[in-house]
Image (cartoon, rainbow, N blue to C red; front, side, top):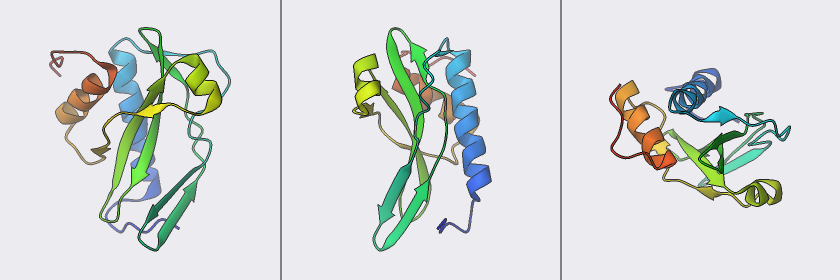
Length: 125
């Protein structure tokens, strides 16, 4: 059950699409691995639960593998970029970068993606 009133699931997924496009613009590539990321995400916030299947592509950048995922907090959903080695990906043990709110302006989204990819200083939008 999607419990947010300020954003629909479709709007939130569109922001995740935007984050992937930003990653691609920074040099990430879509991997040829046919294992979608975020096959099933279940988030809990107090007594609220959300289960969602999101077939996202696996991206690569500088030898690491990345997936755009989510973490749902009580007040609003956040985006998180998971990363790791190919072995981490295959074992579903990727690490999560620091989550960030879905509703950031484009320049802030770009900074968050840059941080998650380890690109410093942040590129200008």
